[in-house]
Image (cartoon, rainbow, N blue to C red):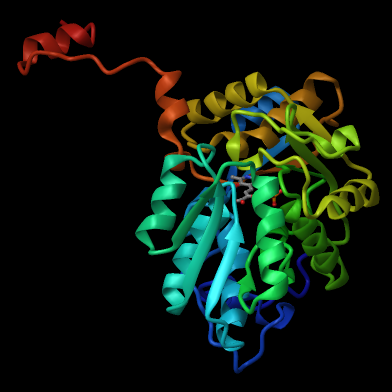
Length: 357
Ligand code: AN7
């Protein structure tokens, strides 16, 4: 029941929309790019395939192309209010893209620490174009994350990774939007898991939505890691995580316990999907008009795996979060698709190529 949803119509940006539920005050300077309010798109294809009523929360339509913007607006607004001079993050790419954009908006210095060779080009381009100082390490994301925490512990800069509680707070607003759109929480909530901040945030959001009386029910939470980067499923840190989905190539997630609490507390689970399954789900989404990055397809791959195993109740309402936009990483898309055909610049050859001659 959507009894007392806040009056948000016409309000842009998650801080304005959900001011009362976020750690900001009336004196906080709001650093925003009008993030949030992303579409919840029905998927006839996945509904037919799974027997559930499947909705896709397309977070790739946020200002920098990923869900990170929801948390970044809160983290950067508070950093600005606190007078912080530098924002720092470690990232597999999307956090750095978002941090760079919001820092530019705030007029703040931004530094990002990334694993060399494992960040999609579009994300790197974003960090660079917004003027962040990009530091690459010969090491993976987990090492970058540990280093950024070490540096932040002893120096006055603001860490804008999801260990910053503002990030989780901002990201929970996506669950509010889903509840508003459906009139209640879905039965099943499915999403990719990397550093595990986002699943922590969604679970908090659904709990708050229930507490506020916007939904009588809670969803079962299903988080999906990539098979070669599945520490939570394995129950142990993965020293050298591997997966083609570089965004979730993480072996020691910062919000590990948040993910296990979401899964256990909701009657859901954390599972793993193979790279091959991620690619198939990525192509399936593309075939219905939705271009995501590989990591974003991991949740859908998980839902498809559950359906194949008979674990999706018929008629259940399922929401899959599509966390990032495909334009960030066109390499895989181009690699697996038919190549462009060169045609002579005349009507005849064009019609011939189209089999319409
Ligand atoms: C598209 O940018 O960790 O489980 O440093 O970019 O909250 O980490 C990105 C993660 C899923 C996993 N989908 O979310 C980073 C970073 C996409 C992502 C995740 C990420 P979390």
